[in-house]
Length: 279
Figure 1 (spheres, rainbow, N blue to C red):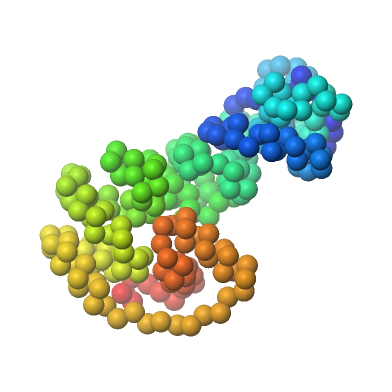
Figure 2 (tube, rainbow, N blue to C red):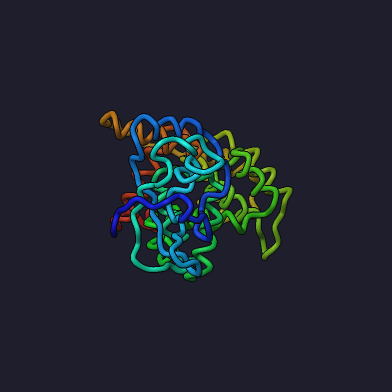
């Protein structure tokens, strides 16, 4: 991939922008950073689909905006061109969107809504979680979480949008509230009320039990789950691992202890040491 300076007037924002919300957020700060340090990361572009001599911006939408009428660098010395990494061929819509989404996701630069939209589009295009995840360089379990959001009932989707519920919990509540293909909103509200305040370990035990007996009273299953003995294991973490665990816990809406337990279970399951028969 060749890197070269391209005139701003020859760059076009087009089909490939996975990031659609909060585009102008902190644009002045980004412009000030470029003024001081220069453009640390070049834009990624490809030849325009129809316009000869033009290039479509794939990655670097906000960086590009700093050089246009929307930004704060227009008219400054050296702002007539932007350093770009140039792909040597035109891209399909799916390829461009996957590359744009992958960069933004890896830099945690997209809103949940943008991430969900990109994941759903690519999942529908490729027809499998694995293929879509490979295009985005995203773990399959993360992509599956975002795709399932798209199928949530409106009331649960709204709670995810307002950060009242993490996507994983909303999806599980939706499944538990759907009997014989019919979604029971009253049952969903009861599950939200009872499960929102508790930690993830208790939620997991609840869903394991409730899935086998969906007609049981919700509060009764909660009380039974609370009596389950949990084995505590002291663990020492490096500072960077502890920091990462805190971020993961916040993203999932749970305590660091519950998040650590979930990470251990996910790891044991992926390595084949934990199966459904172990419950």
